[in-house]
Length: 211
Image (cartoon, rainbow, N blue to C red; front, side, top):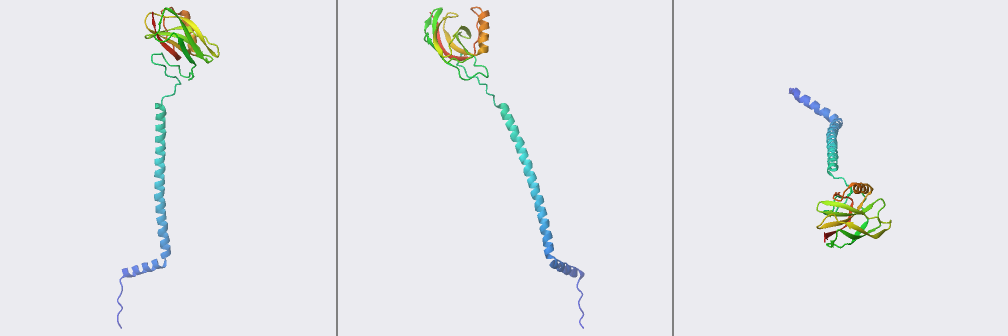
């Protein structure tokens, strides 16, 4: 009788493993699929966390840039620009719609005596505001006359005394109640040589000379 050759133990163990895998192939596949799913979920969770962190950082940067922009943006003052050489603009908070006023006489570049007549017109004066004739010569100015107008506006004539010889500018200005009180106090206590810078709105101006 021929003798049967003995197989190595390693071969038998491998054969048993293949047989086991063959019998439980479906279960092994399910286990591998489950492990793969766990690994994918873990990776996706890490990506989502990283994206959320980046989004929070971007939101913080946007908030910081917005705060810096607000700090650098100048606040609106509501003050209008005055004409060149016409004194300061109205204070913040002043209304941006002055009345329409004009100096009808004397005419520009006209030579006038020490005391001269002046005709002005203000259309629809604003309640709570006052109108002044102001002389300006170089860096100095002198409020000369309050032009009192009825509510609907009118043309009125006044006499004005110029401050000194030489060329000067005659201005018609609109001021609010606070500036009016300052001008009234100045006119009560100032002498003929004193000068005071007048703010408010410049409605009209003419350049004149003395004869």
